[in-house]
Length: 284
Image (cartoon, rainbow, N blue to C red; front, top):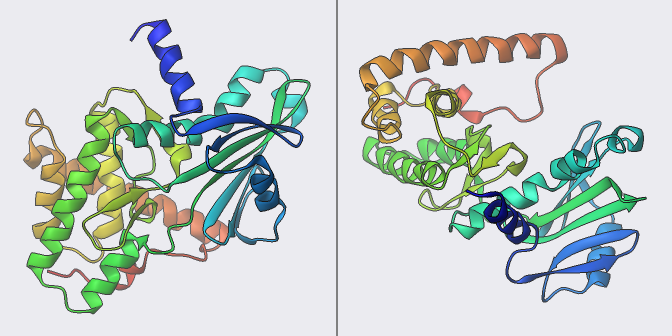
């Protein structure tokens, strides 16, 4: 891709078809064309349920929408304004890249930047609240409790493999492809969230592929046996890779990943939400 082609792509991703740039109180926004700037300002001002908060980000729920706020210390942002803006807008651009190729994500509503002397110090990414879905770990837990057969579980994994393969087909790499970041309502149609972790227009390699496979295997291995998971990961492998060599490497890396997580929990305490599949012994 040439530099001019990349610039055209980035311009499209910042303000895709159906959206428009507009001024908003204290900054600028890219907003869906059927929405007024005043409506976005009102949405940002509403009381909201805080879902998650860190030193730099806050995620809150307002009705049908999720608002993800990102903050940057001005003194740090001023030294690298372009890189800082890239970090703020990354999930917005990544989501629009995936939508451009027909991959399901929460429907976007707006991206808002707050600036001072041209430096972005705060931004908001507003997108659909997937209230009609649940993450695939919870979905799988529920259908196992409901008596799902091996055939039903295999069908679920086959549909999931198809969705994951679509990411690689469009050169989009999700750096945290664990089950908590994949949502579904029916086990057939899937939505990807946590778009901060998505790199787009990149080439896949064995290292990226292994990272994703370990994340997925770690999400499901407490509940599903290798008789289901080996064919599942096999669907995600190119013909150049040998599954008989690949799987031992996945299992080894998964054990290392799990040990690091348990060590972190021992130091800092367990998170509020834990993969419900951990409560199962291997099923099918």
